[in-house]
Length: 434
Ligand SMILES: C[C@H](NC(=O)[C@@H](N)CCCCN)C(=O)O
Image (cartoon, rainbow, N blue to C red; front, side, top):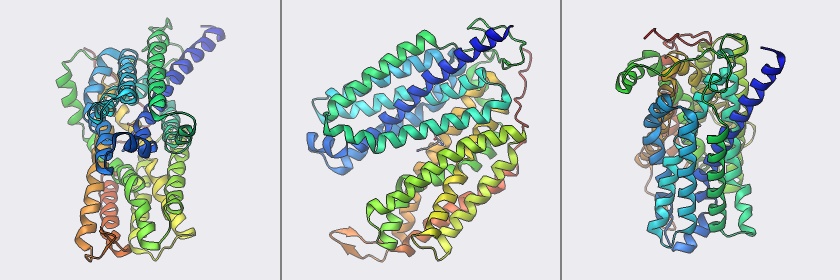
């Protein structure tokens, strides 16, 4: 191959990466938009905050339940077909939401969207595994996570500004149309493997390829579920990433409000900056792991930092200001370890079934976030004094200590597990001959 074909290869793989990433970012918009447009949506359907919460959570239920089926389908039929179909479904869900005449019909919107976008993350991670070399996987996964994070920041704040000019209904319909257009472009331009795009294997810059697995999908799923390193890696990721998402997504703001009397805006700055640090650190850790050719030390380090962070938040005499910044940033940066855990689960199974392994880890983290958020609240209620203000329970800082200790304990379980993770040296296990 000449340099020209290397140039062509790069052009095609970055086009594929860009298209899949755009769908991924749009997926984050769909996920967070009901929150950003909460008041407008509630006003239109005259619903309570609880009903709005149920409506938005529909997305997460279908998304989580569909992760493993999506992984199975992606391993069988490739990212191109699955992401194209997923993006069309997500687009239709967004349009249904935007045009819904009643609350019941509107509730279907996030349900359908969650179903559609469930293919996108695993699709892009699988595609990365086939278009980038093994020693680039940490770095490209870091870029993917960073861009996904940009999507969530865009959905949270700046998109709400659009409401000054457009109705929430027209914004959802336009987002739906954009998803459908992206789906068509994905089907047209994405190729599952370099071979499909006409590149022959054997060149230094081409990644090695995994064929479609010859086994029944149930047998492959059993291979994933019985892989000990995947189990230990999941615990490690729950310790860093699920604890952080549970905190940043729910309890990180109230602890500053109730414990230190910060306003909502002041408190949300801490979680927003921690999320930004998480995104930036995701890129750095993925790149660094590829550079040193090691995964395991960074997984251990992530759990060690996260354990120190949660213990510090529970037991140290911290206050808003530098000590709070330090601890919030510490748990955010530790959570970026997830990039290395994704790389490890992709590397400990044959590439033909890595979609399933990635989906299993992602679903486990999502489930971990949901369980940890509930347990934290349940522990708070156990220590609550019974004080009420304006008809709502009043909590103080000591009520949060039990939940923070729970997060520290989960991180420490992750730390112990991380020592049992197999070092892959950034290389995938080879396919067994069929
Ligand atoms: C990419 C993203 N998944 C993650 O970021 C995981 N670390 C789990 C996050 C859980 C958030 N509630 C996704 O699947 O979109």
